[in-house]
Image (tube, rainbow over all chains, first blue to last red; front, side, top):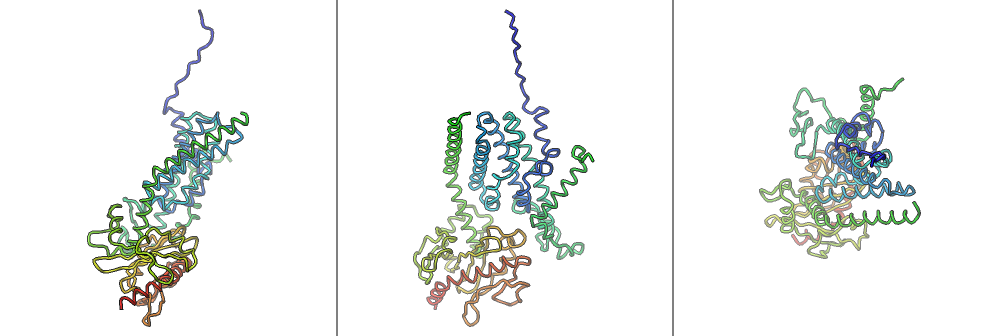
Length: 237
Length: 242
């Protein structure tokens, strides 16, 4: 008997097709959470005085954003709208606590250095922002990728800012890690010793770089450069 | 979605989250506690870092190495405000932050006595207030209980590059070696951080941190008050030394 009902062919979505790659790559430039969406600025100002805490923060935020996107997307039809935000907060807080417990157990020195800021990931606008803007209306795998993409975009800016701040504020890079580079400073520990090197005797560390205010200036400059260079972001006026 | 669904959903969500976090915490607790102990004991030993036996470097010792070294070579006694030794051990389990808030007669303060082949060093934990939040540290005195052999500082929220230098800059701590807390007449004068730099040869002052006056003042105060609380004990030991 002829079956008149049209069988809906369920299209199998590729794991990393064009759309999926867009989710991962857009937040790095065109839709960067910090410079374009203007989210997550607070932690970008606070932790970027050195590269190491910035890297750890970026990894932590990527983990939390990706998995909270995943969980919320999986539950998106089940969460009652009356408790939507509360449920989202519970999931975010759960993931951040997991990060904190793991750091305490497996990398105590970093945990000590980042103490308050890890807990503050709960309040990081990027996490809640992506849950509301994406995870509540999309499937789990794309939501997960969106979370990773935004985490990476956030991380890229954090590392960019921290490299500038640590280099000009302390004369080193990756201080506190096994690959620490002491580049310019007043003692012989540094590659360029400003006390003995005649070319650089005038050089002093820029103390403004050590304060969060410097991050604000640097991010402002990033936004400016990005909006000039990226054709999609140039103001139509 | 009716009310019953909302209640059941919320209850289930929070229960699952609470249960998993509890399990994870229990699983990681032993590791976390060991890390915390290691961190504190390393901070205490770094005040005498230069006087560890040959071949032992705090930067290269394994965690178990540090902990067993501490257990064997350091005696953590507890003294009260009058200088009397209340307990011969258990000093390492005391929460110094709590003690500092208690009134004098209730205080039980730890003193860490490091024994290096018969020579004793006395390490005193101190707490104070920096610019933004708490600061703390350990001051190690030589067996004469007058000359400093080393210090180690930490803080909760001082500014990196400024107040945080008390911890991050090794040269800051190095200044304290050789300074004395008693003057020629035997009066307790502690060690002060002088803004603008200490006069060379001044045994009771070190350079304050440029741009971090308030944190430096906090350290000066912490040393004066904290060591002052240990004075009865210090003087009683000096008496027995004759």
